[in-house]
Amino acid sequence: MVTETSVNRTDPALADELVAAVRTFVAKEVMPVASDLEHADEYPAELVRQMAELGLFGCVVPVAFGGFALDVVTYARIIEELSAGWMSLSGVLNTHTMVCTLLRLHGTDAQKERWLPPLATGEMRGALSLSEPDAGSDTRNISCKASPDGDEYVINGTKMWVTNGERARLVALAARAPEGITCFMVEKDPGPRFGGIAVSRTIGKLGYKGIETVEMVYSDHHIPAEWVLGGPENLGRGLAQILGGLELGRVNIAARGVGVARAAFEAAIAYAQQRHTFGVPIAKHQAIAFKLADMATRLEAARLLTHSAANKLDRGERADVEAGMAKLFASEAALENATEAMRIHGGYGYTTEFPVERYYRDAPLMIIGEGTNEIQRMVIARRLLERYAES
Image (cartoon, rainbow, N blue to C red; front, top):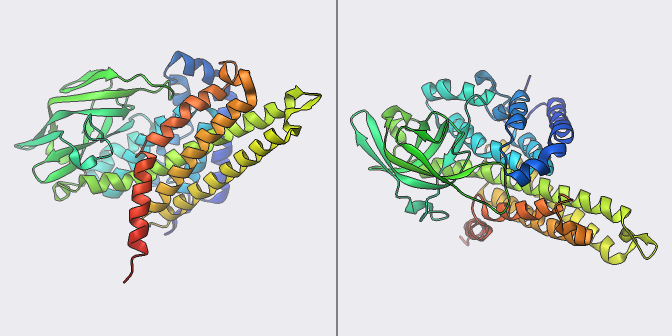
């Protein structure tokens, strides 16, 4: 069983066992099929089913509701393992885990009882619906409306960049109620159309293949008033709730960056010992050796920053600066390592015969997703100035 304390620490033996199980799953089940599924842009239904069997959808769900209640450090380690195999798989978990976290932190007892058990098993999956065509980083510009109508709300608006939007059955939706931006938990049936909600288009992407990213349109969609996250007293408080949940999302993105940076480094150092030029492995050439040294250093620094932010969340503290730093550094490390891995592979790195071209296409997502790195720098600088302000 998972042991929880006031500092939310998972039993180390259980944490290592679960991480090892995920590593084995990635090696045996993911790696042999990842490239084919990714190039076909095919949803990995069988892999997702096995992830559910491992209990990964219940990572952060309390034990009382059927989850593992893992600490954030262990969750980050799991995301690293998945991302080192195929980064898209970690995207299946990210918004789902944020929905679980929002319910755990802010949900009413009835909301937790209704949704956390099926979320823990993966029978129900979660999605986060925040961004809009004209409101990405500028979250206060949300225009999706929730109009009260008796004991219901009527939702109208368009949401962009919704990962898992089609397959998810529970959407944490940010909409503007009369009291202000509010988080609604919108339950829906799976499929492209469900009542007043439609997936208007699937968005094609450079990388991050195999998992849907969609635009969703709400047209006079009626939901019960009891689906306001945390009850009526939380009307107008949705933005603070969701932005708090994004701290965990940024740890997820940082851990993904660590996974991709690791995969790129491991591919590069293996190839550099196999490829010979001028009678020696290219790893013996100082130009390549220095690249490998820098890649390994970036990887280790990214992992330490990610675990530092995760530790702060496990202590129940705000981690906006630390999560932002981890996301910023790890995502840049992933792109730099992917680029260097491609250069070390030479012409082969530009072909689909080796996975390094996939790392190169996947890495930019982490620089943009969960708040662009430009936004991260603004958040970090603002908070640092607050911390070090003169009295």
